[in-house]
Image 1 (cartoon, rainbow, N blue to C red):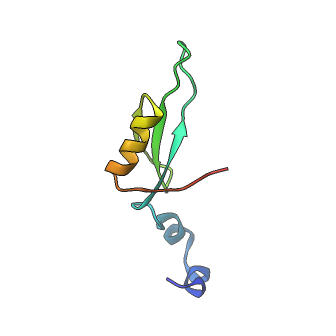
Image 2: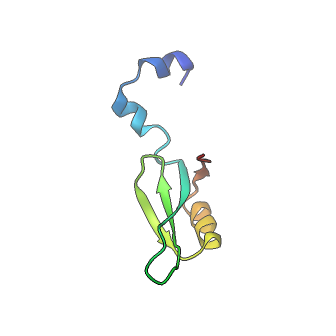
Length: 72
């Protein structure tokens, strides 16, 4: 897909871009015991898994064969 193609796609098509290939790790809010968990989230914002620690989150990203996106 070229830059020119991207300018012509619909919002729905844009939302579908990378949904199966790109993901990110999102820390969740801490629970009542002060424990923080991590979600593996697809490019479309869909939560794919929730794990107890960051190391397991990275392993899940590898397992799902997701490219990591950095969010700021």
